[in-house]
Length: 136
Image: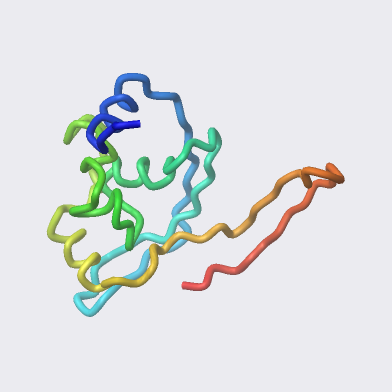
């Protein structure tokens, strides 16, 4: 198609779609050798947009641990593509904390897990739901 990453990002910001994420803090922990404070959250995507959970967490200054795209120094625009300070979050993790967490996490996979997934079977139309404990 001949579009660059920058072109695609600009197009998305020109015509944003509404999205809603519900969250609940389920625990506070220390991560890595420096004992950086992290929160374990339960996220529920209400609108189901691509990368929604990643973008929302990054926009509020709490990127998902191990997110190489929206996390600190990630491939995408910082702050989920929003202007710095456009979303008020008094508890936003500073760059130093995010750097420490990213360093401690290293090259491990992103700390995100689908605890429950439900869908309608495409052939039988049976409603299916699967639960899985968090592996981290």
